[in-house]
Image (cartoon, rainbow, N blue to C red):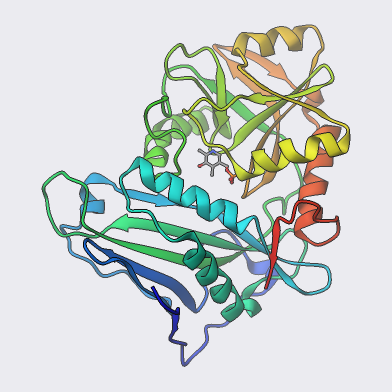
Length: 354
Ligand SMILES: *Cc1c(COP(=O)(O)O)cnc(C)c1O
């Protein structure tokens, strides 16, 4: 596979003002695309004007859901440079997700090169205000026109970009969470550890129901015993119990978040003792009764850290840390966003400067 072809737009779209940004509704002028055909492999990597997708109405993805994606962010640093956060790690995870739904492996170096080139072309779209970023959405889906159930023989891979506003424009405020004891998100041996579209489809009914009951999201328990904590909504979850920072150990049924990995790597450098283990839901309620459950927060690319103020399980409600943001959540949020903005030293080389 050779160079990445470049076709630029003639007319640029207006770039929205930073204070008018929401999430994922406005897209930049260009996108990265490449195609896969059986026998040829991944071909024709290119940067072209943003457009709609044209494919057969019988395309496999529309019927059997072979589709994966990633969510990455690029930031404007304090000195005006543009930095992508942990791009290579996200792109490697895209390839890992691909395996779970039999999407053919991609060349991560081509994807990485294509992404950096695309960001270079769209540099002006990276917003500058605190908390804003350029959201990067790589995704891959089956395009073969055939109604038989099989591994498709044709795919497309895209990367699109959307300038997004601050997740915390209304302030950093704790959320109410329902511990889900009926619906199941994913199980070990299934797609739990992949970023597939179908995981999201499978999560909608539970979160919809929780929202009707006044909660922000659900806390997922393991799909077999409904006893152990797994994730919160589409984020990983952390607890401060006593003097330990605790998160569920990977077991194949939930995603190994890049933000989760960042927290585990940073923790010892910040004097925090991080532990990965199985966490029974009952233990959290017992720790709370003893005054040992100090903080609960989610982690993910969109929010970085999302403090949980209340947990509700089978009708029992507990309030965490007086419904306030705890010191560990605040410290980790400040460190990660600090690295992203070039305010804190990037000790682990997580940034790609464009
Ligand atoms: C994307 C995602 C996360 C968070 O992963 P990050 O890499 O930190 O953004 C957690 N759980 C699920 C199910 C996800 O899809």
